[in-house]
Length: 175
Image (cartoon, rainbow, N blue to C red; front, top):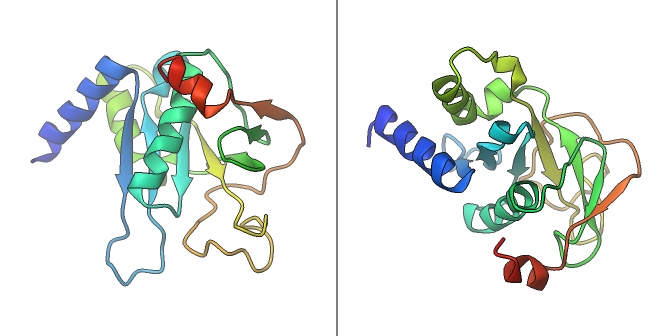
């Protein structure tokens, strides 16, 4: 599939579902760099996109879909420096601002430009969903256990907490 065909398919998903999930894999299998996944389309409702680093597609995609559904179906709003409970079984995740969306969210920029040619690229923002390791350590702490995860922005600050509904409730509400 060529680039235009691929972008058409992503744009169609955004039109149909309100969001598409894009994954980026390291350039070579021997690369130390982690892959990442992100949402495309939340810009349509004035919300930052979400990005997850260091997890395979089959793990990252459900998390990204849950976060996008919280925005699209429940009207929740998320911002940098927040802790979110209910996304993982125990504990919370942090949200931090993605510093350079041009390098990390290329397809989202392409779709924004196609759907809104007069909007400025700077309007596209993203929040990275940062996960603790099994010992509740974070990427900015020594001995963080998820070596594949990359932090694409500043270390989050703050304590404000948001809570997602339980997974069973989300599923029963069509998330």
